[in-house]
Length: 227
Length: 52
Image (cartoon, rainbow over all chains, first blue to last red):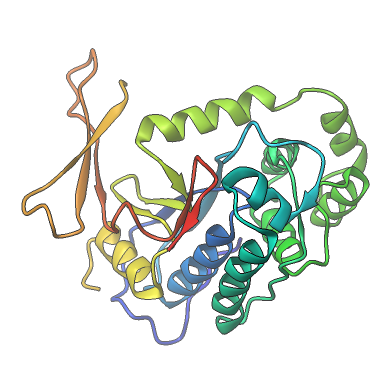
């Protein structure tokens, strides 16, 4: 993600850099909404000398099957209830997302995100992880993209700037597997119990998807300027 | 650096937590991470529950 500023920043200008680490998982709907709000807060923040957003892997459910199945079925298998109840909950989330201008499909598939995280680590090596994640996230929640289809994942990664042969090699082996596990472990060691989880300049953190105002406050506090 | 622990500040109901490291073998001060939002905010947890 490229840093951005608005013409009417909500906080005074500062020369301090803004470094954000965002722990996230592709399958997490609150990460979708939270990242959108965070990006808006960054855009509204004071001009800073540098904005750096680094995505950190936090695989929510390492035990999840690699075989993609519809979201309502996953919910029922995990938590019980009926698919109708699951669809109602998803519909509520869709309403929240769509109110913020984010497309959201309740019919998207769900599966283990480990390989997606590995490809995102590869993308990080190419400097395009944030861009790739944004594309995957929006396409996935819009129901327009299946990131659990390896060919599709290779194609989208290539469009983001990751050579297709490197993505294929990563997916066919175990490259970045340990890196994904290590980053999750580091998150757990930080006390992370869920995602999204954002750390600002290593001093302030926001657990969960807070409001635009909440992220704005976090940025201001991390920069040491009035909100 | 050793793993940090999370504990509430005073007052406990101000939605602010402080994460502090429990020290390491060097003389550097422990890292402090001020948690701004409530930990029970809108998130997906490690059990796969997504709650608001």
